[in-house]
Image (tube, rainbow, N blue to C red; front, side):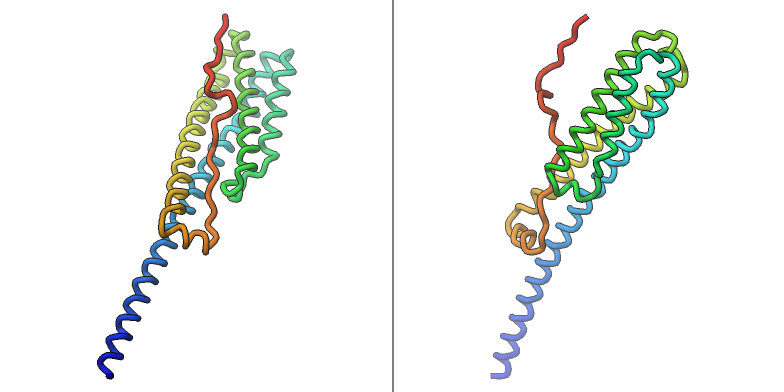
Length: 198
């Protein structure tokens, strides 16, 4: 009788240990995935901040050459102001609507910068100015970094969302309150090729 009780107790302890190990391992993978998403989002914020920091210098450099292009310059400043008004903290990855607003404001800023670059084409002296060329190169590099970091963020979100939805982790994710992460989406009309007219 004692031997049977010890065996039953050992089996129960063994099963409990296996369940605990599985639960802990799944929970830890979810935490790691969520931290990867947060880290990727922090890097997205970092490159967007770099762009915001470059814009005032770019605008001031262009102002000296194109003072009468006031509307375009004001448009860039206004778009930058709007982009900085949306608080893009860590909670944004759990809120698709907030991420969409953030992405929209950044898209408007990109559009304003594009208009500024078109204005620059009218000023050969400005295009040859070393300060402007340096700023333009930094801005182009930043735009490329933004693209790369948004891609990495989407990859981290996809990895997390996949893990969160897989069986049996889905039960642990629901019990522990892990929600799916939002993705960066292409802007409306992005699938259409832009028309280039000369």
